[in-house]
Image (cartoon, rainbow, N blue to C red; front, side, top):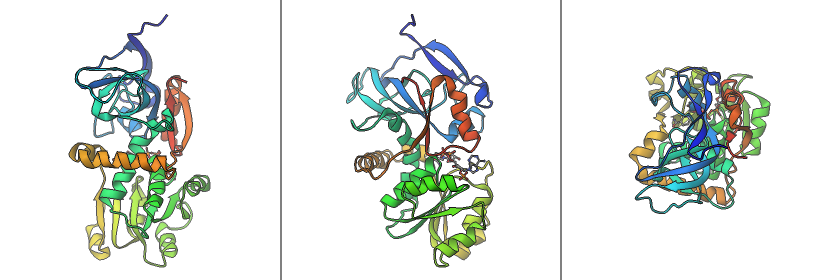
Length: 332
Ligand SMILES: NC(=O)c1ccc[n+]([C@@H]2O[C@H](COP(=O)([O-])OP(=O)(O)OC[C@H]3O[C@@H](n4cnc5c(N)ncnc54)[C@H](OP(=O)(O)O)[C@@H]3O)[C@@H](O)[C@H]2O)c1
């Protein structure tokens, strides 16, 4: 019989592809002061997990580390000085690392109790994608009702979240993606107009869809050539949100374009926002819970894998096949 003080965990011992990770039995962590031990039911996966295990991410924990930062689960134990949480609470947590395991320890201020109606899968899927997109559209772009929002990579984790949140903010949303199947998903999640960027030029298509004006806000998690094209389809006073570089290429921006278009290039770094502006971060989390309760955001879990299939799950991102969110079901 398995000892309660040990657990299964996916370990990264050296940089490499998903296949280089190993599943091992290790000591279960214990919560220190101000910390909480959570029994992980679902772990949410994100593109940055693939970057981190490959050594291509801005934050790199020392080896060996357990990847994965999003958790839906049940509080198993609380450390000293923890208030407001107790064993048995159903929670979501943004753990930083450690989610791809049967248990994780994290700071209590990274843990929120979840509504009864929220599944563990959704709890593990809401934090990063929806948190990033909400922050991007609310604080960074200050998206206004009636404005046109162009979302690139619109069926991916952050992209689909941006489509739903953009609609909730009252924008007209143009969803752009590489296949008609992916676009159909964006349509089902509220996109007003669909744009396949593998057919025709993005700039011409956006201009046509906006009566020649261009988009007021562009949400770009892709980078590369697509960014170059998108910047040419921005409206006067527009905001171009730099979310990420899933294409693998960090583009360069000719600053004379900012002058000519009267536009802003706006960086979005949700992890840093959480540290620098904790009050606004908490307000965003509360607003996302409200949107979920009102049925105005409906996180799509397109695939769920058992813990043992961690490599297959992460390879969905590598193969450009992620639609909505991918989770590991650690306890079924
Ligand atoms: N700034 C922040 O705070 C923050 C927070 C979270 C994530 N991010 C970044 O946002 C990006 C997306 O993350 P995600 O978790 O939403 O990923 P995802 O679900 O895999 O979505 C990425 C999208 O990018 C597009 N894409 C284009 N070229 C690609 C390629 N070569 N490989 C994979 N996808 C490609 C795909 O759409 P099409 O096939 O339709 O082109 C895909 O839907 C990542 O760069 C991530 O690091 C940033």
